[in-house]
Image (cartoon, rainbow, N blue to C red; front, side, top):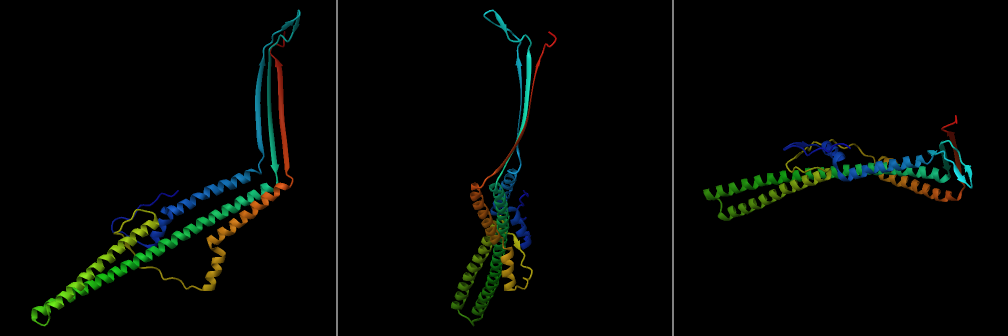
Length: 284
């Protein structure tokens, strides 16, 4: 796992590239999708393990005291102590068409998981980019409202000056004050909307928000787009479409695995065992 990065410092400028890099490391939905990679890889290893033989081994030992038993005056049994040991190793392997299809289904699921991760990265990239542009638009509208507020303030000062020289009326001053007050409210709402959009941007990134962070409006110019080329590229490389194709292959292999249960399977087994037994007092 990559350590999560913290929010930018006070007054720092956050570029679109920085926002996308932070989102790849901190977005919770993307991290959740990435965690599925380990599960899929474990399923593939488990399916490949079916082609390996299983090996069992055992070892044992025994001791028997040499003591005679009398029955109707007759002595039975050995007078020597006995030590015995035994060991065995067994290997077995069972193969079938279902085993092969299960392996291919697990690999298809792994490919689908990788495609899901790529699709999640694409969604995060799109969400962060769209929210970044929305925040830039909010900043531009706020700047416009600030400019209009400066205009209304100038108009108010002009109305007051005309009233003082006798070329204006009190009604003109009141109208200018109302327009200036309305523009102040509009400017304040625009600034609040900027803070809201920046908070939403950091929410899409997945880190603590800094409403005072600055955004860089100098974005790279978009490349020329040809519709037919874009559609062809989407058919070949779209991760969501690739995920659906991989899951279709996984479902086909799972169906083949279920059908192959009616076919014979091959089982191989081999084993080696040994046993020893000796007397402890052979000289008697």
